Length: 448
Image (cartoon, rainbow, N blue to C red; front, side):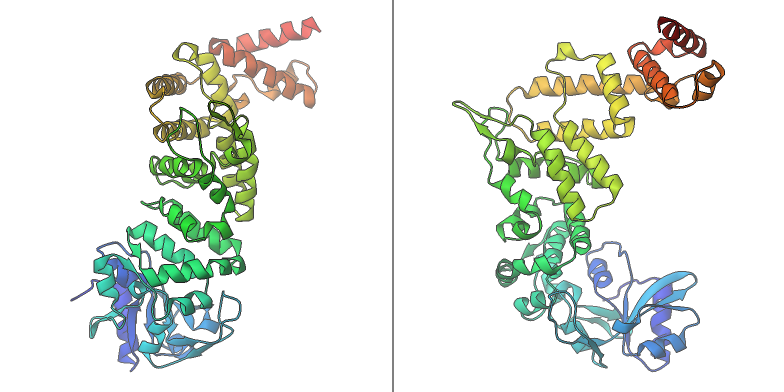
């Protein structure tokens, strides 16, 4: 068999081989090539030492030289080239205390996480598959290289990586690997929030976000996302629902596009329900769950070290996810315009997608009416955008400078007048002309 690697990657391998060293593409790029997927990176492993690598190439960067990794630049394109290595003793379930370089490809591949990631290739020797990774690929199996408990004891993040690959590839995790995950999930407490965030992000934005249920069943979310465990354990005895909170959440995630903000919002949109749940004589009630959920979402996202922009958008959407008109007759352009102004058009557009996914994961009770309300709301939203209605102070046909020229002193009063004008224009978009706004300000000042 032959893998078509980029010309520049082949150039790196040839130069190493011409100097008397072994060199192969390795890991994810081999796996993805066999799956007919486009590799994101083309990593190279070699018998050459880091210093020997640096001597062979004109432009290199010491990106991880203590672990044997040198980035080689070929025509401005980076390739990570790593010396064959054997990891030393692990004591913190995160990283080896030291690494030892080796001349053995077999020893280097043995330290890798899963069989599907432990294959190497070059044009001279073809595919090097010492641990039946190709067979596992063909059978859709995720299996640790060697003893699963040892692999997870070395680096507990591999537990999340197994689940992430399951979600991305649609594979199954084999039995012994599952047993080791269940037994060693507790070690994830030793992994940094940043590393957990990266793997969860890839899982949730994959084609199979429902793998988070497997993470729950294997005890993983109990360590890294206990809020989801509470959702999985919270029933919804209510005509609007047919699933418990956790399964409803998963079905809603599956119903929305795999975009960062949307998937995290769907994961957390009902996080407040376990705390808000009140059992009534006929049905459960979840009053104030969006407000409670907003705070829980903020706690989760900050714990996982997300950026402020993500925290702001997701928490706002969680707070708003349940806000909608009570009946088709109540749908009003004035109200939609005010909602869009409060949220911004960008977030309101996301809200429409979130509400659609939320409804799709509910029962059939009143579904036709809910979908009609949502469709009419979205139609009004699009009409507002097309009309170019003013939705923020910056859209007004008057500025703070204009107000100062009218004699209003710079400071708090300027902002108050502009916000008052926006309130009027949200109700009556045709008021938004400079002449009208000046007249309104003059009348307002005369009232005082």
